[in-house]
Amino acid sequence: MKSRLLLMLTTVAAVGCGSDPIADNPLPDAADAGGDSSADIVDACSGVDCGINGRCVVAGALATCQCDVGFSPVELGCVADNRAPVITNLPATESGQARAEDSLTTMADDPDGDSLHWSLGETTCDFTPVIDAAGLVSWTCEAPGACTVKVLVSDDQEPPLSATGDLTIECLNTPPTFLSAPQAVADEETTLEYLVVCTDPDGEALTLTLGEGDTCGGTLTDSGEGQGDYNLELDETRGGSECTIDVRCADAEDAQS
Image: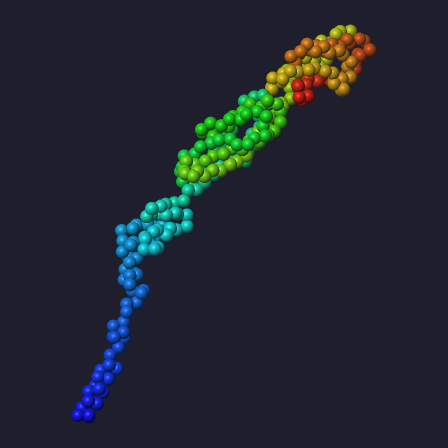
């Protein structure tokens, strides 16, 4: 009897030591709780087409597009980034006569083919240049000199990208020119009469004066508007001699001819 009881206890003990419920039934790995991660990515990207410039990736269980350089994700796709226009003919200098209308057509290219809008920025000019929708800058100089105006062009995207360029405007003073010339030969004991006529391309008021190179000693009468009379009395003492008539025509800016 004592021997049977001991056998039963030994059997029970053996059964108890041979079974580990945790080892036989391990807890699920936390990493496996959500299932196969590769399958999740495939499922989340299913039906997502990022195009040839991107690929679908999963971030926080959500599908998104990872785009190539130069492209940005928009919704579930890759769209080319907006690129700024380029002004192709600035900086430049445009020269014209003072007090006359002048203009220059500025030009630009947009890599994306966007519509472009022109405007003017800061200027050092004492007159007001204007620009139209086609990029034509026009102005009228008020006096000889030079100044600069900044030209801007923007595309029609949101937000817009723009480019700037400097246009230098030169307002030139064109010297007046003579429309007359004195006769080259005159007889003694006569009066040489030279009708002086000069004109100014800029339309400025003109003044006639005798120059320092005049050796004939005649008299000059300024009649205004670029006209006058040069008179020289030729007596017998001048026979066979030569002299120089020097008449100056100057505009309001002191340009002479």
